[in-house]
Image 1 (cartoon, rainbow, N blue to C red):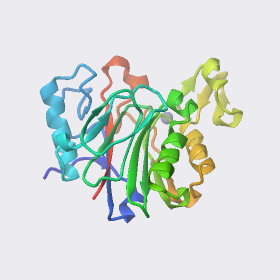
Image 2: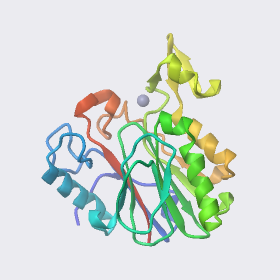
Image 3: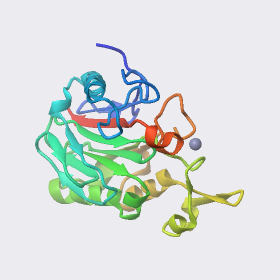
Image 4: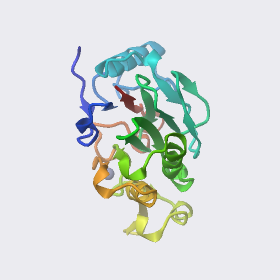
Length: 246
Ligand SMILES: [Zn+2]
């Protein structure tokens, strides 16, 4: 097996019942700036993406065909799945079925992962600013509670690399949609703290602070590590995060 540069979660790694990995821009075969691009929707050659996905999923001991992928649309729609495949128009996938990797594709939007350590269920969430305004993260927790009787205090959460408040400039129309303390003002510009907004949704949903891990990396200002749509525009590849019940 090849060694891939990946991002891991110290918190999720403590639980043998779950496996998690998040890709970087390195370790793939696509021509730069795509590198380790895992999306078929960014103009990359399909055969490159197929090989990149094979490498990424093999790190977790799976083939891409065994995974579930959301066709993301910045909504608050979360879908419970029990088999692999592509799921139209949703931004969170949830399962309590083992061996189905749940994927999220991102370049700046926030990837967020949940694990119910008691009932053994997982969720993979795509939270950009629109999905965050629509409360996609709270919605995923709500469904885990309703579907499997998850206790929010049993949930482990990992917020992956995304556009951080150091770089994530937004317009006044977007800023107005968030509570004032989630927007920083610097040099006449406004910057959104998307991670803090989603941590807030988790805490309001009943998660314990100690069960929430936030990756401090910013996709926009760490070009060696991450794809960024803000930075690379239409040429940007996509990273992927995957969580799976062992
Ligand atoms: Zn930054």
